[in-house]
Amino acid sequence: MLAAQRELPAERIREQGQRAGTFRRDLPQPWLITTAYSLMHAAAEDVTAGRVEADDAAGLITATLLAAFTSPAEHHKAGTTVHQGE
Image (cartoon, rainbow, N blue to C red):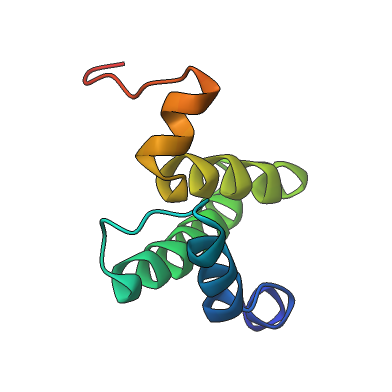
């Protein structure tokens, strides 16, 4: 976990993403950071429990965070939407 925090300085990434309009601005900044760290912890737990392959964890984290952090405007531009129940 500490290695991930050194590699992914969440505060810097979040600030750059929000300035560029890529990351959500409609959710509190501390919540986005909590989401990122919580997801990393969950991935580590799933790897330890054997539910996720260690080699797959980074890709799963990346895909999940991109979906969670991408601004609604970016989803619209990309032609993607989030649907309840999918």
